[in-house]
Length: 132
Image (cartoon, rainbow, N blue to C red; front, side, top):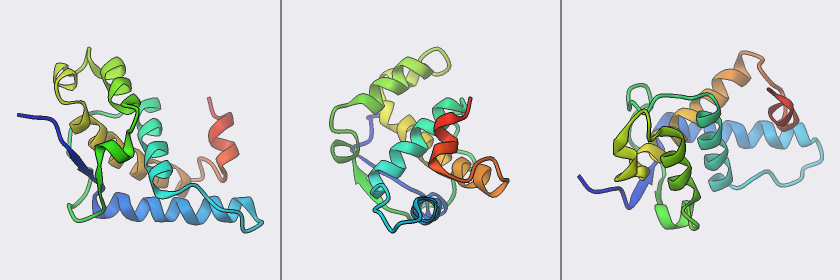
């Protein structure tokens, strides 16, 4: 198998990204601009890694969300390198196909962010930064 050139959000993860846009804007309370969608996707990716989510595609949702070229989402290759560092001992395939893992992590991370927020785990971006 070859690594992905385009990666996609599922319908559910795309909805989570939109919800994140709304609550970030609300928590700022002054109508300032919230992070763009690619930054929200990167936030979801990082959140998934911090929470050590699995690389299984199970539970990421239905196809049909937004598609992104890996060069636009990860222009410096740091997302791919991060996956290799954090997941190589769990799944050797990340060494050859890191963007398959990136796709799973960004989707699961966005879904997990929305889930944790709905459960009252945090109410603002500041809460995420101060969380242990």
